[in-house]
Length: 279
Image 1 (cartoon, helix red, strand yellow):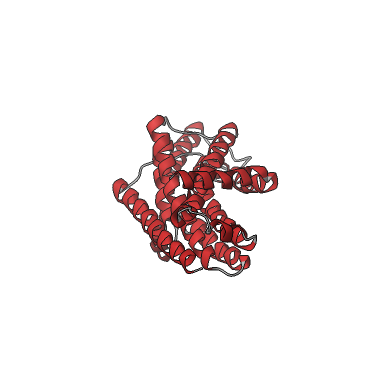
Image 2 (cartoon, one colour; image 1 turned 90 degrees about the vertical axis):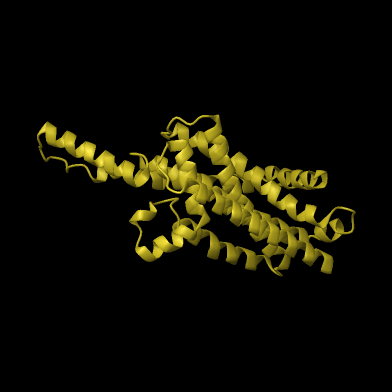
């Protein structure tokens, strides 16, 4: 464990020392919530056209009906809040890729080869990539939550345990993705293969989940995919704790996330150690 934490600290020092990488990894999700979340104003889109005069009771009734429908769909009347809480999970998806990128560069620079000649456990080398990703996601999600709050994020009434539970579900997604990408990178010969795989995996994971739009409004075939997507379940559980949005099959979703994370972590550790031992 001490070796794992020491190697993970090395990863964090590299990340924090490269300001360009740090800023770019933070700016993209912020642009998503600032531009997409704020521009997609559902209440303005569905309000009566300007210049149309309606009785006050009709306008009030329409407003109440609209708000009830928005709460049914999004768990909140504010789409920006819906997207911002979904992006907390999307952060974990995209940051998972960097655990694989780190492995690729360690291989190219010869650092991994030198590290494997030391008494450090092979599993510690793999686990350090995962632990570093969890720390990066925690830092970035805290920043995102603060910026979103300044931009008008409307949380429910979450307590300390709700924040802790939401963080735990984000960490499960980060564990699964970072373990998968790190394992892939141990076997990859070129960094281009990792970047190509990340584009092939990350974007479908984001767009086929409830991070940006409710699953119930998707076509049936996409709903089937979304129900197997761990990002969907993590986003639903995060919104349940932070917004008070209703969620069905809570413990089944939590168990599914934990199972996916445990499976990918276990398989990744086995395959990664096997590759290092073969070198």
